[in-house]
Image (cartoon, rainbow, N blue to C red; front, side):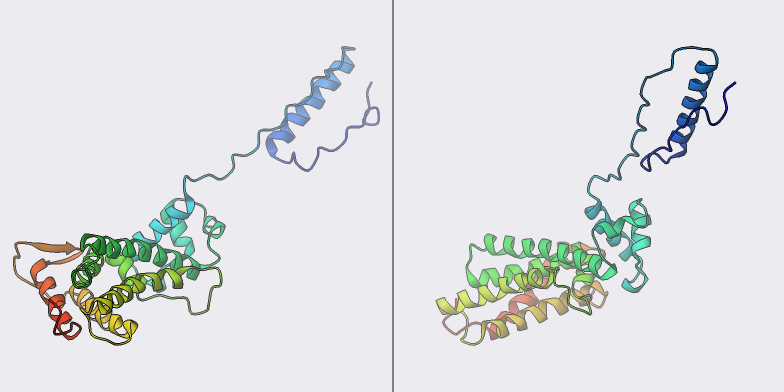
Amino acid sequence: MFTSSTFSFSEPSSSFVSKQFDYEFQAWIARQCSRLYNKETLDTTPLKPMAKKASYHHGDLRQALLEAALVILKTQDIQSLSLRGVARQAGVSHTAPYRHFADKAALLAAVAEEGFIEFGQYLKAAVTEAKAEPIAALQGTGEAYVRYALEHPTHFRLMFSHFPDTPMPDSSLPSTAKGTFQILVDIIASGQATGAFKAGDPEELALGRWALVHGLAMLILDGMITYPKPTATVTGDCPPIPKTLIQGIIANSLGGLMTESAP
């Protein structure tokens, strides 16, 4: 008769702690004892290691979280947004966002930076279309500015409403945002070099143009500028606005910037 002292079985290693392995290990012990009791040859077949739990996988977790945040921000304000809510919207565990973002501020900064990158592409495309001619480029970037705001209102509002309260050394948001403003500064400087724009600090002059088109975009987004049944429109998640109206406002603003010799 076999007693518990007849054989000594070592504890399974700490890497095999799942219930599935405990069950398989106990079953193996039972088979060995049964073979010994019946004087059969011991089964020396090694235990198959338990398959590792599938590692967390999401095609692009970071991008999924950014998109989830945008979905939430379409119906909720920034204060209501939480990492747990973003995780729920993205269909991942509530701890998953921390794989990429230290906190809510880091997530919002990443969403805003994504917006500035795309915004910059709108402005650069306008400069290219204007063939780098300063006056046409400034007009085109103004229209592109408003168009981006109307086509991406959630991104646009976040970009210009949220910046981290405390500096984040690892964030490239400030430099990315400044890069979009630099596009306007370069246009002004180029126009000054050709005599199209009046002399002055290019950054100050660019800031004036920036403020005007930004104010125009916000007025349209907030429904403060409306126009009945336009034919040619720039539209987004807001009432449709005639392109000619936007073009006219921006064109009129250039008057104070151009020199008398400008075409």
